[in-house]
Image (cartoon, rainbow, N blue to C red; front, top):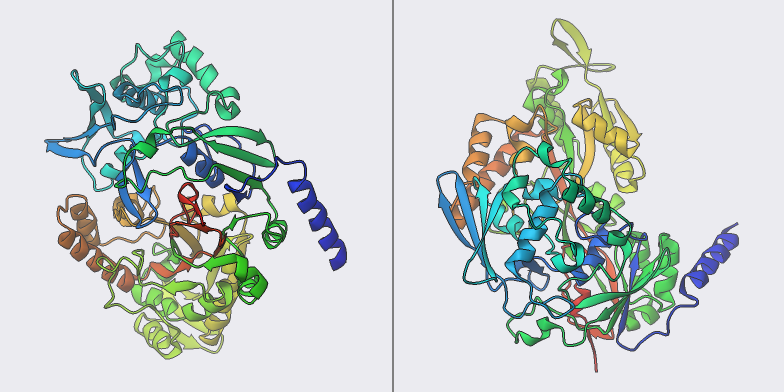
Length: 572
């Protein structure tokens, strides 16, 4: 039977790579797990789509994966920020060299057009609309068509990132009929109902939501260094470097803006085994998210490592345990602390992550040393400590488990641990916890739930304990939606965590001006989280990828997709 599987995978591999254009010396081949549904820079839905779009379009700001720092992209510098009463003003100047594919300049009018598209009704912009909701208006400089000011409601630390973190669209391609020209950005910052029947907007929405704006290479052209050359659905996409791209004329101080490889080909390979076969047959130059067991095998393959370098950057994705602090059995933090001492995090990492992970005491990555509270120690399995805490919380140990009088009724301490079905790492960790809790006399029922049901139960607060993962970044640590008590009833604070002190810390962080003050607040927040033990961070994962050794300037990073393919340089 195993031989049959190998034969099938080999056939899939052959079908994937046959009849493709001849491979170029300067070509880089990268795997995509699925065919992009759309390359529209507003309505895209997948990480693979985003990776391709990043090569076609640009935002005002970008992240340089060489150092994971936020840097100017389409603009000359970071914004000038001014705060007046309840409004904050972000002033930008576009690079004078920035231009579209047809050679026309990128102007502030294009930024205004983009904001209209992101905020208007009827358009497929549901994912992006909340991100720019705080941008009330844009003011164009009357003497400089490259300069503009964004007028924003309130202030929060992440606003600098968000004001520059959306792809700028060429109005000449996306709106050749000037359907949005009569609107102002401020028109779409209040009640949108009056505009839902507007003839111009209705006509524009019909075009924007069509397949042409999702797949047409004549429309999907931005200010980035590449153009879409070929898209064979379900097989591959090829991008070709623009001739005389404007970004090449900026000098040596803009290392974050690159378009080095002549051609970048994205191979659509959903199956991991097929992708690994393609890698081993030198048909792929880059492969990320390699399963840990396979990654370990590749490390010992001398023929493979002669041609490929292997990397394990620390990612910004972490796993955590959520305990429902509203649940009567879990309302006492000593009970939650006892459960935390039954989490064998080192075994979780060894078994479920093949040791490709780093323990953490909270949601701040250990690699961000100024903000990480290194004085705290991650919870480790300690049966004696757990027993002491359960007794202190009023639980009585009997022959068949722990019991406590709650609301006039004798109740046994039992747990239901849920996770998204298909996550083998959490499945293994759940079984390890179940075994460890059994030694303490606590029955644990493990439930693998379909993704939508898992999310539904979390939002409805219908759970006692779950495994979950979250992705972060090294730029913004505003955890208010996750931990503030105002988000405990509705919002992403699923565990119900929150104390008067932690709420004040989260409120103060949004106004903190200095790095020292931010560090003080975040370290104290981590102390409270650790003590309350409702949101228990477990570990930050390490990514696993392989890149062919004929390329240099890879910019390996913990930020997805873990490398900057536009920066790759062919070794001489």
